[in-house]
Image (cartoon, rainbow, N blue to C red; front, side):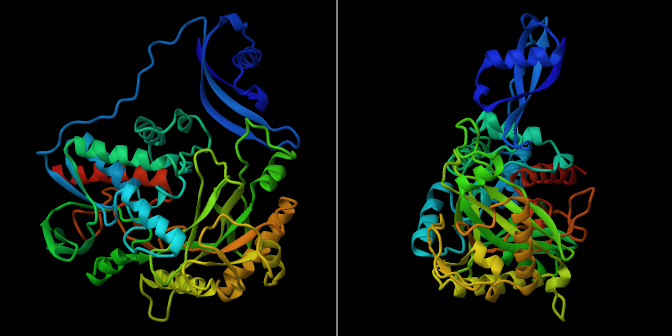
Length: 519
């Protein structure tokens, strides 16, 4: 018999095979000597019961028989160096997975990335963290691997209906991620490990005959008879192409402006905006696990919070247990913060975005433009830059002071390397965002007693949660409705919200581009 079963087990027995076998035997009502093999398929922490934190483990079990030889995942690949070319703009998860799918389908991907390879990119991030110097082409958002490379590598998604999440996880495992990502309920790679995985993927693309060009910026798109005809790179190189996958990420504002100026339809869309809030990790552990000291087999505790405040959602976003707050601006006179965690999640801090829904009607101007959301974001990021005193010093308040409407006289220790400046965040955030965050924090403090703490710090601003622009596309063909051969893709086009959903969208856009070419 071959079946599945789920057991609950205390953290101290997580690595005890004899105890796990005993629990499976009891759960199934089968003598343990009849269980010939069991394999872990899903793992999650259940902290819903006070003072009783357990692991929920789902196992594949073979009774009275041994499993047949398990198939090992193999990446479909071939040499495509002489095949038809498909141009892909952006080497984030959407662009990477689009390129791999092109190779699988027998086409040559040529990936154009405005930023640098991961190793060179590190130097620009060091300058950003230590000196507050923003390189507009190489930062936490732009460069090999996109925004996810140096900001966490969380792989959790609710987008299972959009595509094959198992395929994406298997590919990441193939390129070096641990097998844990295929079983954990909230899989995570870690910023310290993801760059090598991204580099391995790029090397495979080149090995199979594809091309990757760094420091190569899309500067124009040419359309003839409602079809893509040429693209311009770095302002001086013109290339003929009939197929373009546009996977530039949510912060490529110049690309949105380029499309709009060329009368290629784009549209404003809603997004979310707020702050990063950081607590001591030990405090979050005690609140979530209801214990003084976290068991060594338990991960750094996380949380997910959401409330409706005055008809708008207020919610946690990109929660980073054992994490670090980082500067994520792409413009020299703006300030943006984000968060990430190393693979061990062993920082003494826990941070999370805490954001408010921003609808189109909240930022649209008297003369509406699809770029109005970008202008709205930019104004707030410029206020944050000035409010923190420039050089990526971030405006901040103690969480308790933010809620009570006070300006902090001192600030607690924080993981944000460029430094903090106590600032009245009412001068930075829009009033409708600030008020809802205040009330949201109050209500979250009622849900998690001790959450609104004097030890916690609010850091502004978290403004790049998703793209403020959507590039329209046909639901069936994935192609722009008025420009044949143009395939808007991933987060920047408004069709994804993280590594997993962007990767899935990249695969789908590549398959759609191939269908277009053979039609």
